Length: 354
Image 1 (cartoon, rainbow, N blue to C red):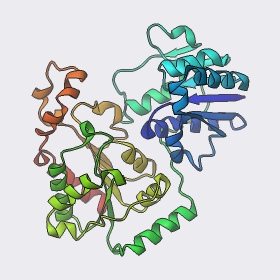
Image 2: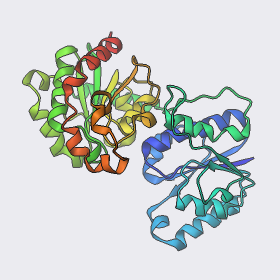
Image 3: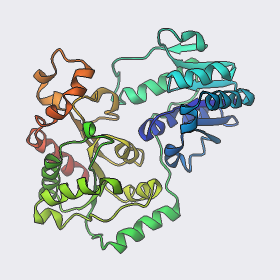
Image 4: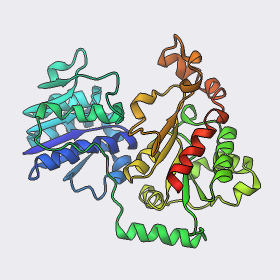
């Protein structure tokens, strides 16, 4: 049996959609399971034995219709028995159309249901604490009636070499090994997903004041100036706990570093999802325009906690569409004071650092 799973999106989406591959492997241990993703996301798939081949969707496929069609015919030549499209946008529709797979599964959407043999309802509300991002992916397995216990948890795999390199990096930076380490998801993927820097500094101060921990900042080199702003706004006593220059050289080394941490706190995004896949407790600060119900996965108010402005100022969201909220996101962020959830964060630290 040959299976193709499609997820042309960013790191968090690719990692979460890998649960489709993991459950298919349990159900069909001898199948060939291939995964089509962006090349930038492949580090989160390393070591995953549920995936036989990674097919890259590259920039050329987006820019050139010829290259996209070429990829479609390559997929057709593989003669897949089953195709699961977790992306379900125009680019994947073209690939699905050309694939000639025997069974094709995706979400039910007006105007393109004819492309698939099975169209699954795109649920608007979560039914469990898994969150919609997980539940929607798992729903794509329902037409298969798999005779296995479904595992909803994404997995990341850290090699012994990567684990040792991370520990060596901690040693090189003189990280105190007699206290636990907290990772701060300092910046979102864009400004509209980034908690205001002066507020974030107060959050870091609050962590340092309430826990005797080492503190790491997650940021890319191109975000150095923003990271410095947060650092400089922190109190001197907090700065002493921050290992500002302890960074991974690439995504795999970052995964190794997170694996050494006790928990993660900060902006929603790929770093949070990677930490969860490493079984690390998380405290997420959501952007005002992002729907918490989708990405607040595994919420239990103990190990996985999240906060959203709507939790505290629901009046600011009345009669507003997602488009309106996105446009007003920066001004709404200014209403999202750290004082709203300081007690909740303190409890989270107590429950997960004891």
